[in-house]
Length: 498
Image 1 (cartoon, rainbow, N blue to C red):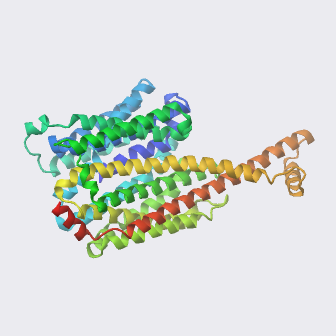
Image 2: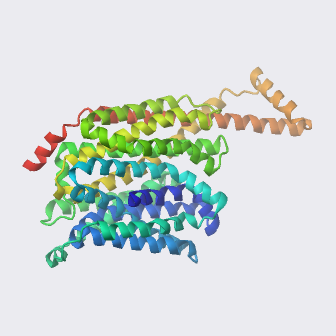
Image 3: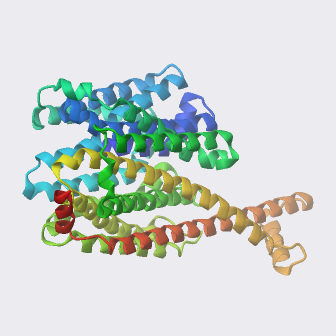
């Protein structure tokens, strides 16, 4: 539970506190944009490789090492003498944090008693999304009351507890097996690190640098694609693959990971739109934005144990479909957005989305766990972390670009109707002029500026509405895909036969 929370918080708190970090580190917007990229790359690389390395050195040793690295990096990062040192500390810290979620999945699959597995996976799914939505409140509290240093130091308070839980709670690893080290698939790991790291960097920087209009982004995406292709070829041809990607030939598992990526797409898309709306339109600060997002987090915390009990009695496919439908409904309700919406207006759709996310994600994780054998948990841990991070990153990058482009389109279309000779335009400018009570020349200029601001404001609102519509379409597609999920018994039978 601590591991999955801190792993997600390390990314989201940094996203919300990026402006504070840029100021504290004395870097500009372009340099500061690489902070979150570095964290994402580290977590992705750690998540891809740690399940395989854990099968070689033992999951307990791997977790303890990840905790130690993350603790040291979190402690030292705020003390970095320059920006480069801070980036290096963030990369190493995220490598350690990237081990937590995949190894949690492996631990629950292999060691938690069968009658408690449903609760274990429900808590795992809840923690990831709970921490996703409390991050704004945490960062806002540090910014208003403490200091930016605590965006890193907060993990030093809880990681010793996690270390003790792992040290005394997880079974001892088997003795070292020299043959596993000799057969270590280093080429595949290097291809995977390079490929997925480059792809993540290209996606994360794409909106800022105008995608294929930038040689850097094009090079990152092309290089990442070629390295991932080499990784796939290597894993399909070697006798000792690091990750058995052949299991993806089973249609149910491939469908599960598509759904997982789709849900992460929706979650981070909405997690982008709402904070941007509140900051741009309503001028909210971080702590005020966090108040809205808490209405997604809190219901998940309350539902986790009843949901675990329910899924012991009910086919998870039903709750998966119901959760997808609720998320789509919440997104559609949010399309009623106006420039008057504030905290209270978001409570209805956000609470509905919270219930939907809890149902969908918990059901999906349980369906995955029931469709595999314990021996396949290593590959599943890597696939889940990759789907989770890349799906969320694609969702954020898509929504940033989509909202930006739609805002430009709406601004142009609205501007076509603002004509100086039009009576409505003249009345609006006159009203602005009377309200300003300035000299004639100054009043006209200021009134024009206010009118331009009103057009830009409405264009932004319409772009956010389009964003909610896009998220609703993806949720509807997930609902349709959920209808093709087979029963866990059938999927497990196929896994055993293979």
